[in-house]
Image (cartoon, rainbow, N blue to C red; front, side):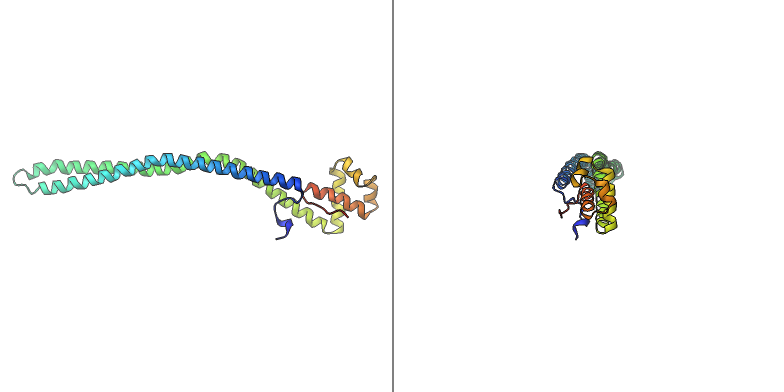
Length: 206
């Protein structure tokens, strides 16, 4: 891959700043991912309680149902004994259903709360960082393409005359405007180099 397609500057100072920002964004994202996972884990304990309640109540319901069916075969009093057991079995099933609802609700809530806690601070940093990096890459590609042609180099030199500090312009040539009008190759290269460096592109001196 050509260096102009890499979203990093080739000037040392700007490259260092970009790498530092990458590290900061990575650490920031990692920290908030950990926070989101911690929130998810904390809320998931409620879902685990719901699963335990459901499992225990299902077991009790099965036992009571089996006991009711067995008691029904007792002569004379079988019906009287089995009815409360059957009713208790149904009540245990209701408790199991409540445990299942608690499990489902807490599991869903764990995901929602984790995203609500971690997503805003993460996106608040990552989105501007990504937008700036894309903007930098687009400018780098545009400036690199202009610098590859004589007319493009003259345009970059003209932009430098409009945008760069006077001290840097006169460091290239004492009369930067006159040199540009005269199409002085050395002056145009120097002025274009100022604009390239402002875009994060290192330029070899001629």
